[in-house]
Every structure is written in structure tokens, then in C-alpha cells.
Picture 1 (cartoon, rainbow, N blue to C red):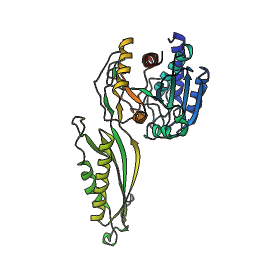
Picture 2: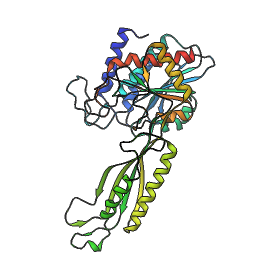
Picture 3: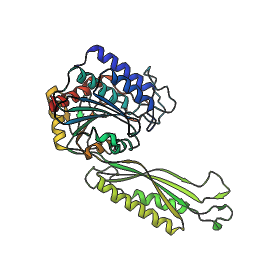
Picture 4: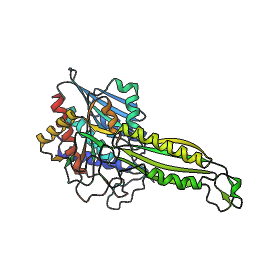
Length: 384
């Protein structure tokens, strides 16, 4: 159980994390800060450098039993914070914890305090501080790291703060929680020419004009229900040539975010989008290249993990339901579910609260004891 002193210290720790955000792949100092906090809890083992800057603390009972992993994210966002209402706003220009990851880390450290004081009876607890969630690469890198195989989980749980729900209410369900998504960069290459003689070059301008609505038309989910056939293509950026009046362009780029209700649907949508881009490029005499970015697997809740989580919430009086899920937004926690029974829980900060990724978002510290209590009860129910 957390004391008032614990909550004061954890709140101050969370606000300190908030001041010094680090974006995906750059979380070195955040990881060191987490390790220093974990050392005070005397875990059985701390593994660093997982999949980049990832940190995992093991609390091992020494007795046979399952391994239960609880995950938080280390990284922040490349967003300039604008929030005069708090005294602990980001001190790093252009970077901020406006997705709640500072709070998620703190909930895991709160769980660590409780486990260290009252050890589990069997099995192992893993506190996983994962890097690079925001670009979709972190969980895959952690799971692929040989060091992860030594602490591989049987069960995995995560909590993400999710504006739009009442304070302390958890949204969750069996099956799909977060859509798969993929950033597809399409580069079209032709030949520049003098603007007075465009016929001497090969311009991608008309190809881009045709490609953008064609990619958009591949989706069927704009404003509609999130069902098994859900597809959405969002054009996020386009660029043609140079910002000048004397040159007919020879290069262009189109960025499209593809989104589907599952991983199989994503493979099909990506193949269709690539084929469409190739056809348009060929029609206008252009070459085409592709790059993939921000590749998120779908996050899917296992029925047994859902049952464990909901029973834990019932036992401690935390309300839950299926409101606002599944979500179109992506979350790479689903990768841990490839080898474990996993469940994601979305914890409400209160209705009317600032949305995630808004420049004035800040994690509500009063959620720390709620989230950590859910985690602890899950751990006790599985491990004693």
C-alpha cells in the first residue's frame, strides 16, 4: 500500500520526468533516472539497453510460477509544450511529455515500491520501461532483443491514460483495442526543367494530384464504425519540387498513414497502396520508391488477460466498461501480446480533460494510486 509520503515523492518524481522529456530513441537520461529509482527497491535484477534504452526490473520470488510483465513507456513527443498552468513544464525546447508517459512510468515505480515491501509468493514480476513507443519501433526492438528472452513474459499488462472518460474509469474489452497503422512515404522521381519549357522535363505534379485522392479512396472508415473491415488512409504531407517559380519540378513526396482493424488487413492495404502508386507513376513516366515509418501492430486483448484485469478492478472497486474502445489510435504494446496473454487498460482522467498530444496536456497525478493499485491487484491475483 502506498503511504501519503510515497504519493508526495512519486508526484514530485513524475513532475521531474515531465521537465526533461526525451523523444523516441533518445531516452538515455530518462533510463538512467529510472534505474536510479529502481535501485532503491532492490529488485532481483535490472536489465538495461533493451531494444535501445529500455529498462526491465525483475522481482523474482524464487518459486515456480508465471512471469507477469507490466509496461510503461520512456519516450516523449516532439511537441512544444504550451501550458502556463503548471510549474513543471518542459525545459527542453520542442519536446514534451504530452502523452502521459511520465505518469505511466511513475505508476510502475509505485508498483515496484509495493512489491519490494511485500514480495510476491511465486513467479516473477517484470517492470518494463520500454523505449520508442511513439514511433512504433520500441516494443518490437525489445521483444527481438536476446536479453528479453531471459525474462520473457507469460502475462503482460499496460495502462494508458485516455481522455474522454470519467476520472478513474477504465475502458477495456476483449479483442481489438488499438488499430494497426503504418506510415507510407511515396517518393516520385522525374526530371526538372525550366518553367518556360516544362515539356523538357518529367513533372510529378499531375501524378500527385491523381495519387492523393486515389489513396484517400482506399479507406472506408472516415466517420464510420470501427469494424473488422475498417480501413483509413490519411494524407499527412505532400511536397512537389522546390519553392521557386523558375523550375518545373522533378521530385515529389506523399506521406500517407494507413490504418486497419488488424495486422492482416494492414498487409493487404499496404500492398494495394503500393500497387496504386506504381500504376500512377508509370502512367506519368515517373520512378517510385517507398519507405515505411511508424509501423504499429494492432493491440489485441487476450480473453484470459482481460478476465484477470477486470476481476482485479472489481476487487478494488475500480469502474470499467467498453466505452470509447476499440480506438483508431495505435499503440505498440500489442507486440508483447504476440508471446504472452496481454491486456491494455485505458484509464480516464476526467471528462473535458485536455486531449493527448495537445500542447497543454499534463498527466493527472491523482491517477498514480489508481493505476498502481490495479497493477498490484493483478500481480497479487496471479502471483500471491
